[in-house]
Image (cartoon, rainbow, N blue to C red; front, side, top):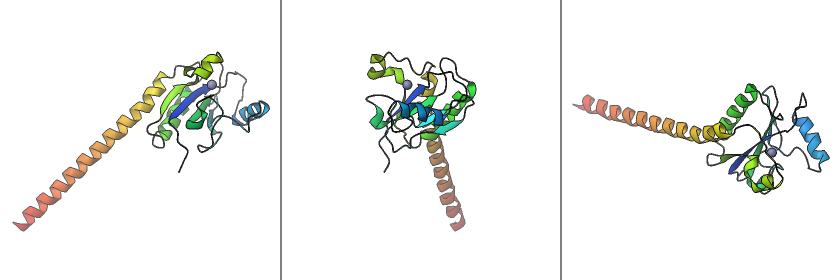
Length: 166
Ligand SMILES: [Zn+2]
C-alpha cells in the first residue's frame, strides 16, 4: 500500500544556472541539511523528467504539506521552456491514474510559502490544475463509452442467439 497522496505541488528551482539536474538539486538540499533532494521529480530545462524521492518517501518541498503530497520542480528562475511544460503535462497524465483524487497546486498557495514570501513556481499553474481534473473526465468518458460498446455487444449476442433458435 502506497503513501496517501492528495496534493501535487509545483515548484521552480529559483535559479537560472545552466545544466541543472536532480543531482545538483540533491547537493543543494543536502547542503541545507535535508536527507536528499526534497522533490519527487525534477524537470530540466531540456524537458527531461528526473526522479528525486520515491512516491513512498515523504518529500521536503512544502512545509505543512509534505506528509501527503508529491513535489515536482521545474528548473528555472523566471522563464521556462516549452519542453518543460510538455514534460509536466506527460508527468501529470502519468500520475493521474495513481492518485485520481489528488489536486494540483502552486507552492505559493500554501500559508508556509506565503509566510516565507515565496512566489514559487512563478509560471501559471492553472492549465495544469485543469489538465489534472480533465484527465479524469476523459477517462470517465472512455469508461462510459466502453460500457456502451459492451452493452451493444451483449445485445447483439442475445439477438443473434434468438435468431438462430427461431
Ligand atoms: Zn517551491
